[in-house]
Image (tube, rainbow, N blue to C red; front, top):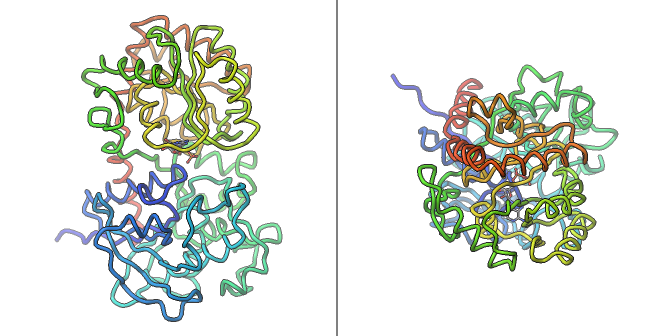
Length: 483
Ligand code: ADP
């Protein structure tokens, strides 16, 4: 008899296209769809931000939450345009605001982050345990600190039927709050232990996920190893080593329908792995649109990223002259640290024909940049998985990356051996410093000047399978293994 596939409640604060600040949204928007293709019953549980509620189709009230601490709260059920099942926690006092979900416009953490994401996680646990009518789930798959307390609440509820999986997308975001929050969020003081939620006399929501979940995953095998070390464990190394027997790394994929150069409505000319001769038209169109010198032979480098030191973009900001001195151009889209933003803006002001800098977040423009550029920088100091290099490869744009985390797992460096066997897909460098970045920029110009070699790099990128197919099966195996 065929085995019944488990029902999964995927709990996260972001899901593309309803709400997105970064890669987490891409994963939560795409992995459940890939799992659905494998016959798994997945529902995504989200905070009821305005864009989430307005983006739902066939929305209906599942239940009114009469005892919920915020008035007029409900669970709303609906689907996304692509058919993904969603349950949203519509709690207007907590989630009825626009803009970044975690920070105010001035970049401060929102003061009620702990309270609202704790209640969000608590509701998810109660929902999975069947406390809201007939709906219940076999597995909670929680993502990042915002959903980190779900397994803690499952423990408090005492429901051992529901299994819990916790995925760390970035160990740098730990959800650390004063311990006084515990009474407000209905967690007994007994959880304030070194093998519980306690973190340097505070409470970490991420630690809740690590301490109490049945399985822990992160988004690449190399990052899974890195975070168990004291040097890269960001204070969690010891705990993650102790839980090493239930920790694994599963690489992210991307939604290859959303990111498809053959059908992408945002780009000037379509192309594919079979024929990418039209990619050059996108390059020319972008150069023209941005007021850059229209130069088919000048290598066009790009950045689409948060502008932070994690992403190594402070290093790149110092190398812009090197790129233009060698005859290249740079197009950048991103926002983040004001000092990094200022440096890039200054460079663009001084050299507007060769450098274009757009500070902001713009999904269609990100697609255009991916379709148009020759190479993309992701010089990260650490990178759990990274999605931009996967999008880049899908669009035949050669990634230039730091050899860390998921970047080392997804890119094959164009060293002489890899070139000889025609498997290279990008350029890697290590250690992550100015000297090595400068050397790698030089190396990219050398490779670009050899048209045949560069073409084979582009072809190899386009040939990569960056879809969720393989990894979705690995998650399904994991779900099955915990049940
Ligand atoms: P992060 O650490 O920011 O999550 P990832 O590489 O995992 O990095 O995912 C970043 C995602 O956000 C990618 O889909 C990328 O295209 C997108 N992105 C980043 N910055 C911008 C921006 N300024 N405008 C549009 N999309 C962006």
